[in-house]
Image (cartoon, rainbow, N blue to C red):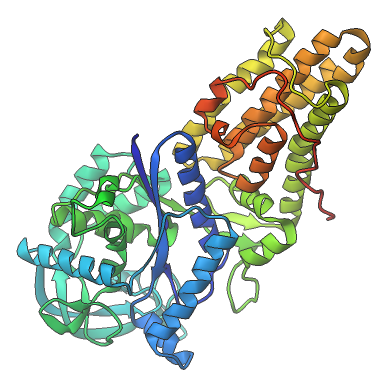
Length: 506
């Protein structure tokens, strides 16, 4: 089987998880689940980024040592993954021994290839971003200076090791041109290319002003710059530096999912580090947008941070998973609105999909003795419905692979609306009085529609779709995409249906 490797960014442990963390991981989870559904061997990685000056300061502010602080906060991200139903195969922490070994091995390889040299750095540094900024990027307001991200900056001068990033600029531009799908969406690709075309400077990759990090091999007065440390996690988990490790077959990663604020690090620094070390770059970096809350920028100071765990408590896990990928094109910024969430849940899940399932399965219980009618040839009036169902998995798969999740869900909903139109037009409740054979055929086609919908929706709503497939009489072995080609046998016993979605009061 072909392999697929998908990653979230590793999340900074200076605070609790919020909706942005859940959003990135959800997209990764859906992509990984779809690949498994398609028969691929999948490796899905998430984890936490636990080094750096910002984490050291957060630990001090909490009155804790850095390791104890990171132990506590990292657990919140594990809890988020469990609550949101993420199917990650590994959870990496940058404080683990395996990661220290991988980072130091990569450093030594870069030294061996003469890609690192010792110098000193002075410039504007943002602790919050763990990044240096050029003078042309700094904005001054009220006597203070800020990075483009809004983070305050300070002038820093200290000894530093440098990575020869400047020499990799032409290679990067050629790589982007030869691999036009490497950065997505297109707006992010254009942004990165403009930045690289403006010329790259060598990159400071060590610090001496704090100690919470991985020591530089042979010079423990320096710790590795947080981005070299953090980005290496993707190959640490794949077994590096042991390229004979069982997991190394998954490298290079198929998609790194990231927020748009860290696309530069993943699309410039990371492929340059890898190429300089003689390693293959990832195949794709997808940078999604940010959420606002009822039209307002989300911030702790405004008190409007959205807690995904509370949303799940209030509306249920699968409805929240559905809404987050349905509401906004992945890659764009989007506004979180409870009215929009309730509208999607009631109109699309409860009314369109849930009502179709309840009507169909209740009719099979009453009119067919609770067993599946026989498969039958399609009549002309069935052709449109069945044709749409036959092409749906392929269409959804193509959209998921392009990270167009909202369009994938719209394709499914469009077919569900068609199935609702079909049941109304064919009226199997009336056919019971006039044509029992035709009634059974109609109900069988509707059962087929529900089976297709439930199968392709599993990555988005795994729990609810498992319950629907149970009600449809589909065994655990029959829930992959390939199994759709095998009709369920006539007479399969179906349990009495129960509602899958509840309507929410606005």
